[in-house]
Picture 1: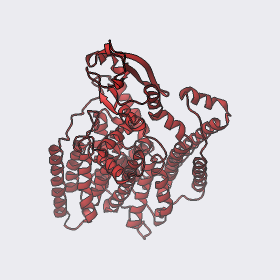
Picture 2 (picture 1 turned 180 degrees about the horizontal axis):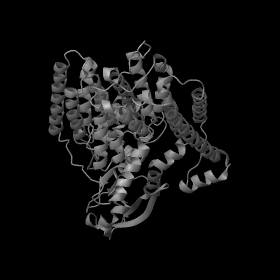
Picture 3 (picture 1 turned 180 degrees about the vertical axis):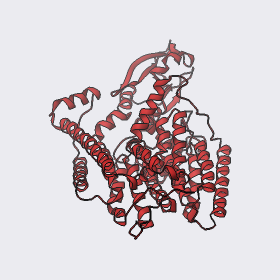
Picture 4 (picture 1 turned 90 degrees about the vertical axis):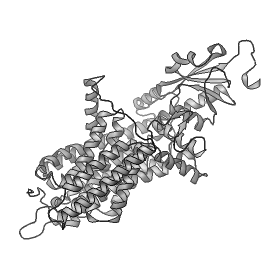
Length: 573
């Protein structure tokens, strides 16, 4: 027998969040980070390199390679999307063209999360208590308010910012995981959108490098579709059985698809097997900041709704979040794995809203206000220091960290940053006013603060971040040394370095071998010890050691070809 819901919500507490404000908030979060920057190291640049190779016809579409190296994430669909937009928009810079589909994927993540939570909140077991004399929240209005809160919670998660604005398979995995989540959540309503969304979500996950994740989500969703039904639903057992068979069949088909395309990879790596406690401590730290501010609300939800664990609105996000946590704990790319669980974390956080008391809500507001206002002040102070030299300390720190960086002034960036700051001040003024009724009010400041920080970083700090995180300066130094050359041999370079040399330097790269075929050889410094096993060092002389200004781990060694008995350069022979 199901216990009564802990949610006690009146109709005036589910006032609609203005759609224009919500859309503007999403737009302000999605667009910055995809516009006005170069590809960043290293996964962002490497992924772009595979897309450019596919668009140029230099590699197989079913086995993408970058100078002979297979893709790190074993994905296909994200690279196809980027390459397709490069070919579709030949008049646009390729580095910008590939960002368009990934911006759409992030928008799809936000949309699918909202609609998934809306359908979960419509279920009878998720609805608030009915009042004796009426006045409780209307089911549709209540579901809409919970969905608004979930979207705000997702945007507020600190871990979503950078990774969701890259052009890597992780963004596609996030979008398709959210789409699968929506599909399962909406299945009981027999909407055709759900019957399409779920298979597309699972297949997209498999083609984006996460077939195991897709199968796990499908297996859990099968059990949830069979068991987590609402007793008020007519013919619930027959409908649940039909949904479970549908979900199971699609899961099996996705497994067959992954097998046919050879997408399965073994990536299990328990953190405690090698480094012990340090790895586990880092994972806990990652979990705490990456999912903030959702995780405290998730704990509150688990406590207040503890008697409704058989309800679909809890079991579904719990399964999606649990799979993400399990993958996070057992793979190397912990942050990218945890990213896929953020929609589920946001969903659970949203169901805490109708049960929050005033003291908890005030604590969230004050912490958020102090944290994001402090971050905004730091960003503005550093920017002012770079532009005016006062105060001197921040500019000196930037000059020390980024040798060679020259500050520049962008009127458009300043206008956007001022607009974001003004919007934040207005939001704070609104929140401290007499607006205590809407249940989504406690997540307005966290989401607004996250958007403020992201907009300020992507406007005021974009130029120094671009200088610090891309390979353009390193490539320029290589080109200055080599001049005009037919090709450059490479050994041990990272995928991002290879892609940057091809994109920024327009260089033809070939793999190093015993028989020299180019006048220059570029070697990653960490691979230097293995170099004599591949090339004849008697034919090469070290010309220079080159470094990215902001990173001591990206040093490369440039060798010049000098035959033992023939001083004529190879390109002139």
